[in-house]
Image (cartoon, rainbow, N blue to C red; front, top):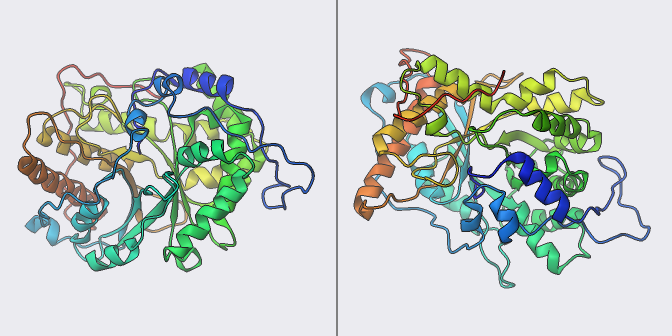
Length: 437
């Protein structure tokens, strides 16, 4: 997502949001009741995510999001087909891919569409575009048709961005978060999405403040209620900002998570709406690819980081354990296939060949079969950024190779025969992060 990975720390982020944020929210009657007809205070609006103060305590590429131009739908690169070995793969069921795309969503779809038949089904987020009022709230048209032309195994997911609706709310404080969700859903349906027929929506950038700030949680909860609408089954994919891999599971983080998990109304709504719960586990090469570590040690470190919240929640006695654990069991962490970034997401400012190894390692670590399902699931972020000194033509060739590596790694994990072993990644100054001690 546009919120990437280099922030000062979760505690500082939470503090900034709590101090600056307006602690007022529209309350709903339970998780699904009607909004009170009594006098309603202004809808809660968190601190402006694009302010200098708040941006400094968040992932660093938030500043890029706050200076948005027209995102690139596709770099129009060539599509690299699977190798002969991958092309011959047999898969019992398709692996479900949940991909966040900051840019190049059509290019990513083209690469995933040529996976061996029956091995990959991909859901790829599509960002909003600027509307007539200057706000970044408008669902891009024709995406369903564009994806259908690419392949039957790739599907768009329209994005609803929490920070964009937050910024819009500063000019429309009388519009509740619930009503914002209703409006966003109506716009997505006008663009052709049918959520009662299998389509999915994405809520992007659930704020780090939601961990500790009850008002932020109420805002997210009510927005999701509006987005879910009358859908009978969960239809939303929720992207949740989290701490950097280089940070630690501090006592303050554990205390904040415990408070969050105890928020019964919040988790009741997420249980109803979230088909996938995606923590931004944007791993860093500098925190994974220690020179003398084995592939298994690196995989274990990545899993500890990606699934820390699920593991921690199991150690707690919670007011509504069933709701929390149901949502977390739908956990599809977003791996870090954003290349090449030195100051956002996790560190990936390395050669394409080094990034390919890191990407394949993350697939091996984070792909999982969710409880009650029979297919493999994997999530990742895709945000191409051309390295300095690399020509446009070379960059596009690199992207073709990198997306092929990601696709083939997913097929390798999902195939029923002849699976290749996972190789470790290497970076001279890297250390192995420890997220469970």
